[in-house]
Image 1 (cartoon, rainbow, N blue to C red):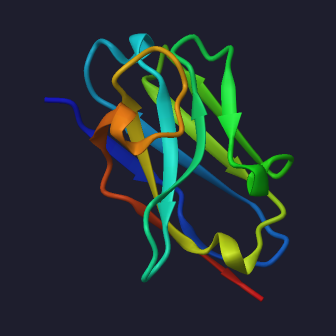
Image 2 (cartoon, helix red, strand yellow):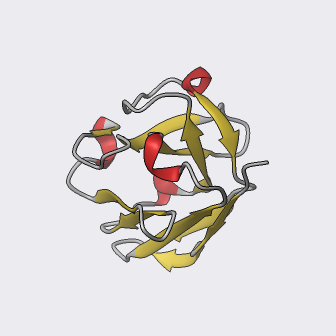
Image 3 (cartoon, helix red, strand yellow):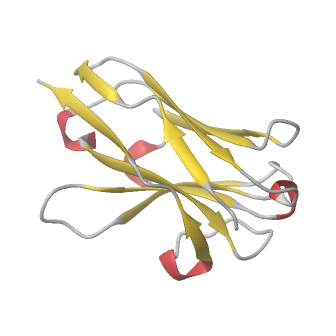
Length: 124
């Protein structure tokens, strides 16, 4: 059974930074793409960013380009999301997910395992 555990969420002022981590159990972490999604109250879960299995390719939501950076450490089975220049509209529960394939994807259906989420709240 694959388990994903996010950490690093919290309350931050607009313009601030946070670093989210997602630790993944299992020995096949390096063979799958990883993604971060977010869901605000009353809204659908949306794609934020993804990284390929090798870490070479990344894919960002336009509104976070230049502010968010995804990375992965295959030796530690961990994927990170560095967020800077945070805005109130970034407030949401953030979820990491393991892809079904090696390539990065923005589609929810391309991910099969999900973490429990970590809350990010940005005050104005």
